[in-house]
Length: 196
Image (tube, rainbow, N blue to C red):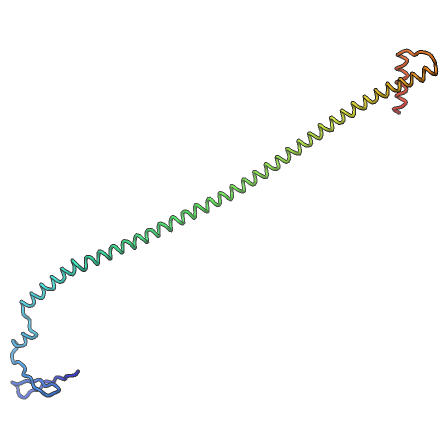
């Protein structure tokens, strides 16, 4: 401290304060003089209390309420943001779950489509092979029928040619006329010999 205060007593009635410089200041002797400096005055207390109430009222009206209102609105905005974020997260999880279900369904559906396509291709292949076999069998049967028909026709043609040749030979050899019945008998015998 720059100033040191000491209390000196010269006698019981005189009390003085001495500072560092050494000057003396007289101290009041009764308490009423102290009340003015430190004392408790009722009107001052009432005035100070009223000032405190007014200060509190105005601070509450113009400072605390707007600040509280601002803090409450900001807290509401923050709560709304948290609620919106929670809703967005919930919706995202729902969409994700829906997407996974749809993906699983799409995978199962694609596998089913592939199985059906393979089964249809196998059925189509079998049908085409059956048609090809049927066509080949029909063609073979027609060819056999045609061959059989042509063989019969060739046999008839050979029979007729041979019979004509045989008749001409027989006429020349026998110089006589053969009846139709004899003619057919000779031809049949000749064909049998050729077939063996």
